Length: 190
Image (cartoon, rainbow, N blue to C red; front, side, top):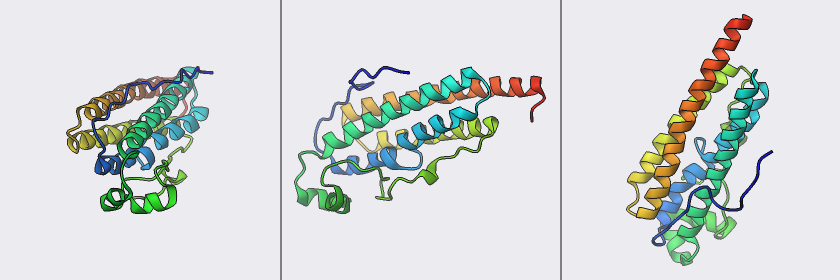
């Protein structure tokens, strides 16, 4: 059980409407390497972890990823909420507007809807933890690309926070991999 504090894990400051940046941020909102995919992946994988410690870690990181999804959603919403329809269309978000107005819908930067096919959960804890480490590295790289695409200091600040959390998650998954490997070696499970 966890408590929801009804506030963002990190504040979101947006200096101005930037529809292109909003479009790019959809990569982390509904893309294969985004926060929604990560959160659901980890919360699904936790059940086949052999140790309570690694189950707890996947639960903790999975719920944190959903908090990051909320941060991304807030950034996108703030970037598009006051934009006139003509600008939304010129920015390549006309199809999104047609179906969702300014509401958020999980899709990637190209408009491809989110799908459960993005989630990898094979049931082997070593394989899943390697997948998780790779996912964190892909998300970190995506955040670096997003940082390069904006000059909004508030957005950059929030993206840097999110990028650093990916680094921490990668390290924690590395520790979990060590624990699981030691456990399997002791139990002679391969």
